[in-house]
Image (cartoon, rainbow, N blue to C red; front, side):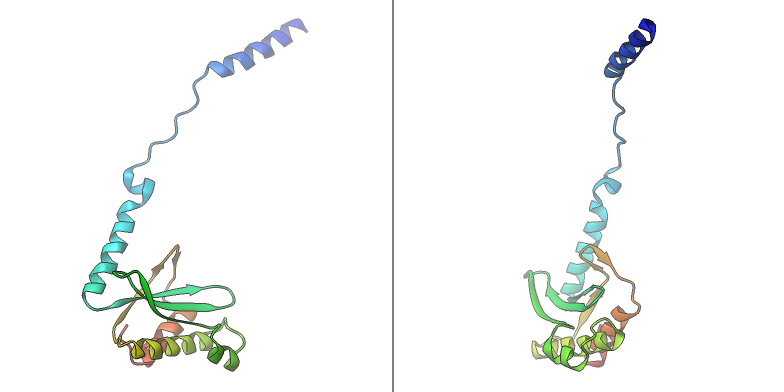
Length: 150
């Protein structure tokens, strides 16, 4: 009995003397993702130098939102979503492709009113990476049908 207690005490005491495992060292590329963020930022600025503003899309389960962003100024030039009254009155369900197409057409109309004729689709919208498929594709196609070059 006494031997078991002393062994337990020695095991607990010895665990305090063992150095903790060192955290794994990651490379600078994988650690912060700085190179990827730099590439995205460089692409955004290069597109803006060509006269194209960024078309940013956010897709939730119930709605879809789109906005045109001027990265040099840091402003949203125009925006549209399925929550706009003109779209919501036509189609109360905001999570289908037809509603996304209407959002794209409304965004194209608002962008034309601001004097924009060229945009580029930003796949890396914030923390989301959307494939060009489904509702996102319908939205961009709606923008194209509205007369904007994407």
